[in-house]
Length: 370
Image (cartoon, rainbow, N blue to C red; front, side, top):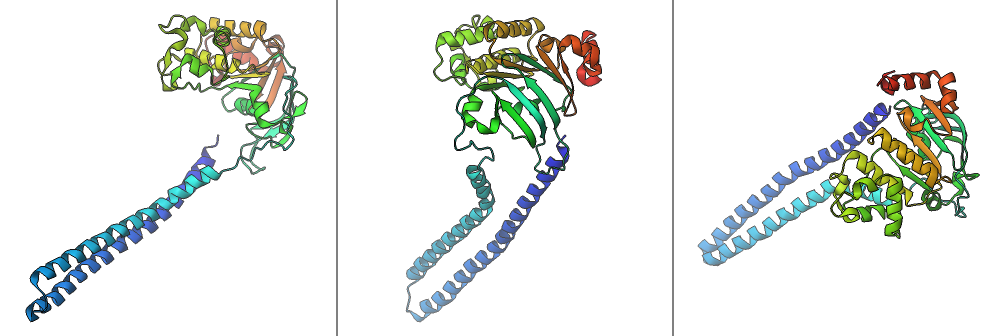
């Protein structure tokens, strides 16, 4: 949905690079003939003057050859210096871009007296509108969203690709600021919190699961640096990850390759869920993060959440109705707007999109085919 903007942005950056390289090449093309002209002119001058002095007897042939060698060494050094100078010019564009990245300051800053404690996991979206562009005339990704999620409840989100599901949850830990309206967590506007405090209490497991090279224990401690082995075992048990970890030769000391390439997609998802649970969050967000696990394991994970972390607000984004149908409240998003909210039974009676999705999946269909 951002293809046009990204294409224009890429074209602009490409034109800048083209102009810089073109200017550098012009200098390079001009530099080479000038330097070669200087070298050969110097050689001819030395030969001409030196030959006359040799004929006059005022210079020995050996002295002329030494002078010729010194002149050539000096000229070659000057040529190398000119080449280095050109390379510096050509690298200036890259250096400027590196400096821009290093000196970039985030537009999202903690207030000077930011609140450092999240009271509970209640979430309120109050007339929220949001788009990624700075131009307010661009269409909204989320348009006038009003919803209240009680603390400790489970909240399901269903919607087609591009309907704004991920954008919705990214506003909770303030990864982005709303364009208008207000997002409140624990009764306070998210802008009033210290960013580190807020994000420590909101655990997100995104669609793309990231594991790092190291043991399973090392990966788990990215969620909590001081986590004990017992705490890691408990988190993995809740995420149904202990089932396959115990079958591994080195168990929790098993080495994970960069990106988790030596474990399956479902195993990666369960490990990242366990890592998020180690933070002991007030709010847990699962963004389609159980799509690679089977239905039975998905159900066991949800049941474990219900019994083991009942005080944690759980937000589950899924394309599968079976993953969210037991939620206390379900929201259906359609093109950035709230189509309907309610329980599974209520939405089956009142929401056509939910009805169609449920029926298609019961028959083996897919949400995006409607």
